[in-house]
Length: 465
Ligand SMILES: Cc1ncc(COP(=O)(O)O)c(C=O)c1O
Image 1 (cartoon, rainbow, N blue to C red):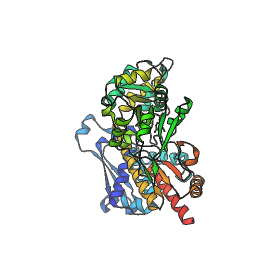
Image 2: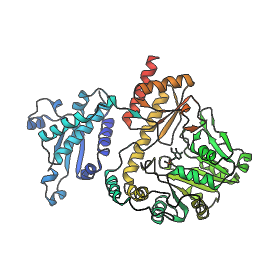
Image 3: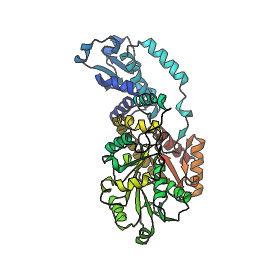
Image 4: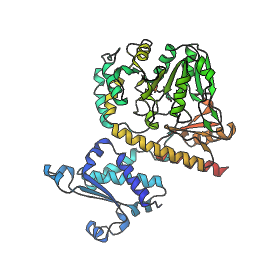
């Protein structure tokens, strides 16, 4: 299997960026380059007969043998040879895996390990690693699918010994300060909560009355309204493959609570700022903009909280920072609204680990930003490929993609076929969303190899007719 030089270099960059944190930290003094084949001179030096017998090379002074002066000398070098890797691989996925193994192997030399030690470690690792073919792919929940920074996990695990103590509770001053600094508002504008689900619950309790919901959308706006026994107006916003919030003036005058999910779940649609401002100006009740996928969209109406008294924004650390299991969300609004909301929640709304985790994940913002960028690339490629296969994928600004099929029958066949091939997705009939039709499947965006596998299985499905 051949790939272009650019593609190959991208695979090398990706292999490095997905290395464990402690490897990447040490790599700042190593230059990684790609060459087509090893030279004759090098082969003689290495006593290797075939130019295809060498996949990678480490040149430098192993970390364990260097003096403190070493940093001022030339950087170490890792060379990855393209052609020998290509001839061994059937597809791009295999090239990617092979590049990763070679990079890890060469870094092993940098850590002072000889060839024999490395081979032994690799044999043992191969024994415990399951072949990818058999790995199940879960694309149902839209959580953070990449490894969490190891340094962050270590720091957080050190907090475990203090879980006998209560969280700060009440004011949550430090946590609010951290969150306020991250988003760029005053701490009085922030209310931390037990996930943004709790923001939804608290807001619903605080602004009781008719609830206006733009369907299809995230299910919890409706669920919270139902728990409070509130009347709901479900406004259909999806028509002819487009999701547009089109509330009528009448609807905006009679609702106490108006929901906007930006980007919308499950369509992934960006809601234009002018649209939100128009709603804020016409609405009589409170408008809540759910920005739990803000980090993927990159647009916010945060700057409007002082201008519009009827604006609350909801954010989360679940999908962007990978804290879904710890539960950390927050509301942003003017201090009067925040005070009112606080009265509807418990004193210890946020648990101690989540409270500590916020500052810790933010120290690794660079890593997260890199992952967000990578996820967006994988997502956009997936949308393109789905459309090339002849299905209809909605353009998405979130970490999931909604695909519309011809009818329920076709959707069921595709969903079942994916499942038989170990790929789990969320179909419209599973009631995870408010009013999503049976002709839809939502795919969470996983790693590139997972999405490539989805495309491979769907191509197979089409071929089999
Ligand atoms: C649009 C939307 N809002 C809120 C949430 C809840 O997120 P959290 O984990 O912060 O409660 C989700 C989770 O799926 C979501 O998709």
